[in-house]
Structures are given as structure tokens and as C-alpha cells.
Length: 319
Image (cartoon, rainbow, N blue to C red; front, side):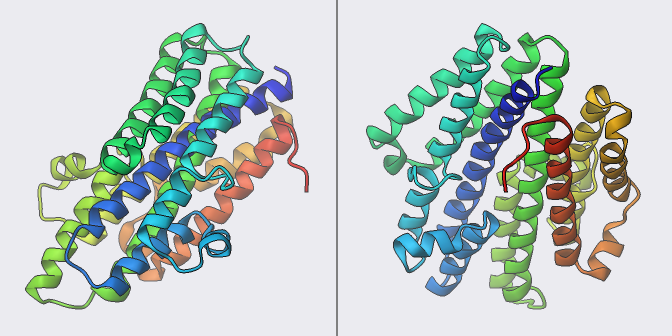
């Protein structure tokens, strides 16, 4: 496969997944903002969301003080923000258009219709009327895109590059979500035992689990009250949790093996080592040595892996 074609397919999948993850992060912040809390705590939540995406400086340059309405506008509708939902869906559509002949008709039409529909919804003010419903729509369109791709595309290199893009992006975003949300709760609520704080913790962790479609899975797996260490275990180490770091790296490694060769053995080795650290890790050890340090290192390794994949297979990123 031509590297430029592989590049477009890889980034089409990454941008689609990024739009979904942005919708998930905005949704969990929007839901938790409805809980009783101080203005300062609410502002920290929105500031943390910008930090997740490394967009705090870009936001402040445009809007100054961090406020809920401006953050949501910036992360959903602002086309000058390359990580906003509208920008991601537009970039996914442009990458799909560039390789229209490689995609099935159903896969192309799904991407194109998503782009046309999101522009219509935003111009009609549907996002402002019901943000929660809009975020659900973005997630549904991402699910539809993946389902149509797997259900209609030939199981060849094109599909493997799309799957790699999807799960590299998912691993990155899940790690950022866990890192920022755990840090926020640890700094304000860990170590307290008041009934009010425990009630807040329940809704906070419930919202985080729902943001990764993990609430029902948590209940099924642990059959217990929501505990932070088990949330971390589910989202980091459980291979049977679809959005966990372990499950994401399983997909990256298996798809990398299907397109790689002798010249990419080092990239495959690094991906396998990262997956092995998750496969044989224990949440107690991770928490004892520091969750933030573990996730920061994981993000560095995932980003380095993405750079190696680009160098080995795709159009090199200009520096």
C-alpha cells in the first residue's frame, strides 16, 4: 500500500476517534457540573479538560478566564481549534475524501453524512439546546463509522491501518482522562470521609465510568460499590474492557503485526513491551509507585510509538 494512502486512512480513523473522545470528556464534565459544588471546583474541572487536550494556553489566548460556556464552544464549534469536534470530523472527512477509492461506498457515505449533519446541527443551535444529546449523537456516529468499516471493508492493510489509528488514539485519550480525573479527586476528596464527599465521589466516579461506557461493565465485573482503585484497574489493566489501555494496546499490537515486516521489528518490539507492561501489571503496584507518573510515562511511550509508526509506514510528520 502507498504510504500516503495508509496515512489518510490512519488519520481518518484517529480524527473520528478523537471527536468521540472529546465528546465523552465534555459530556462527563457537563454532567458533573450539574452536581452541587463550588464555583472554584467547577472551574478546575473545565481547566482540567483543557489540560487533558493540551489546549489550555490556546484557549486562554482566545477567551482568557476559564468558563463552562466558552470551553464547550471552544471544544465543539471553534474551527480554529484543531482538536474541536467540528475540526476533527472535518479532518476525518477530508482524509476519507482523499482515499475515496479505497473505501467502500458505505464507509465514505458515513463519513460524509456525519460532516454534513454536524454542520447542520451546529448552525441550527441543536448543541446549545441539548448538549448531552449532541454528545450522544457524536458518539453514535463514531460507533457507526467503526461498525460500517469493519462490516464492509476488505480485511486487508487498509483496515489494519484504520484500526491502528483508532486504538492508538483511544489509548492516548483514555490515559489522559484517567490522569486528570484521578488527580482532581485526589487533590480535593481523597482522605475525607464526610457523607457529602462520599456522595459526591459516587456521582463523580459514576460519571467518569459512563464517559467511557464503563458503568454497567463495572457493576458486572466487580459487583460492589464504586471504588477509585477498581475504576483505575478497569480503565488501565482489564483486557476485556473495550476502552481500557490494555485492550487498546492489544489491538495496536495485533494490527501492527499484520502490516509489519523485518524493517519494522523495533516498532513492533516497543509496542509489545508496552502491552506486556499492562498485561502483567498490578493496580496496587501502579498506585504505590504513583498513578500520575505511570500514566505520564505511558503517554510518552504511546506518542513515541505513533511517531515510529508514522516513520515506518506513513507520510513523515514535518518538524
